[in-house]
Image 1: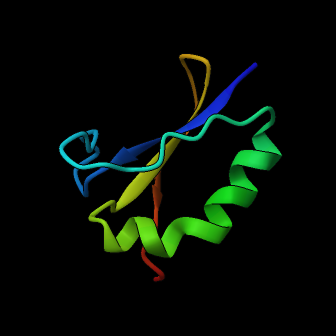
Image 2: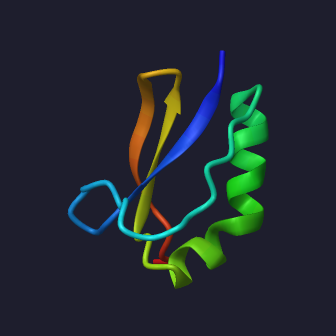
Length: 68
């Protein structure tokens, strides 16, 4: 199992037009911990929301990086 984040714009489209971290994680917990430490930088880079993928399976999507 490999976990990774897909970076998305506000409408859910994948952000691919800029250099962003392409980390791969051995567990869901590791991926979520990394996001907890890096979400501000991602938001500043133009990422509005993320999706968590396990291989090609979407675990969840539409997780906003903006504080409500």
